[in-house]
Image (cartoon, rainbow, N blue to C red; front, side, top):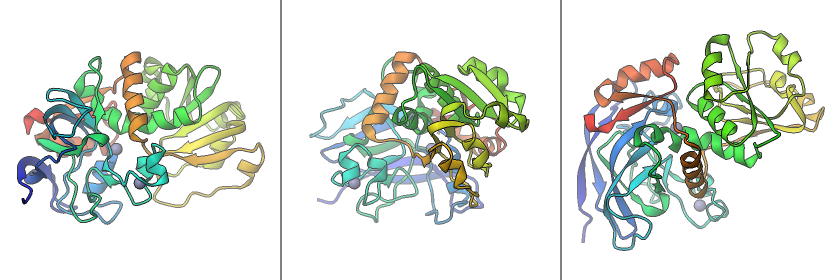
Length: 351
Ligand SMILES: [Zn+2]
Ligand SMILES: [Zn+2]
């Protein structure tokens, strides 16, 4: 029997130079292990903008972005055990993976050896069915890749946890941020503000390293113990050898060698962004002090659930500004100018 398609309203860009506009997509009829989620809110991630504008190359048009999805389950397949109709649910940056490779079986589905099926601008695991994201009425996903959203969390401000939240939670956990650890968060934007909240809740001593003094009061409000403006180069001397962990949320080219100088012996700087250009690295920055430079990308399903449960226990959500879907193009322009504190979330009831 051919699968029945479910007509679904969405917002899509037809080309890199056109704004997002109303569009209709088809979602698959749910299979045995699928749930249907009526999308209530979807966060705007900077990577949505990069892909809509084809700044990374290779975008498949039309593109329906959005991978910070929260909503309510409206239908479940016959084999679904984790969810029932009416449950609050979330979907992050991927909607499927092979489930069998070493990474998938170790909870690292984002690094699936066969390539995860990312939530949009990607393909399902058949490598031919296009995926469409959360700027849409509903989404159909195998329950294994769907997160439970705890009742304690408000749906709107929870949306950004599905990408920005897990992007910070995973490295903070992996490199053991906690009591007695000095953690620096470089950059206070959508990612950085989640890093401050999460590292503070984990019990670490948190320092924000931002370009100017502009966000100091905000950083302290979010939970930072210390704040330094890196436009003052004396900061790199003052803070030499200070940190157990530096999380660099900035995609722009920074002098990594200068930042590595602020690490203690045996400590790590983790990169979350990918600069457009190569960044010069002096091996001496690592050799002197047995330091590490690493990277991290979102997190697996089990860890993403752990993050949501942690946020519910610690009363953590994103600082958001709600926007209507009709204003999404204007919101993009403001994100590019860093003119939002700290994440736009689309109210999908406006679709
Ligand atoms: Zn994202
Ligand atoms: Zn896999």
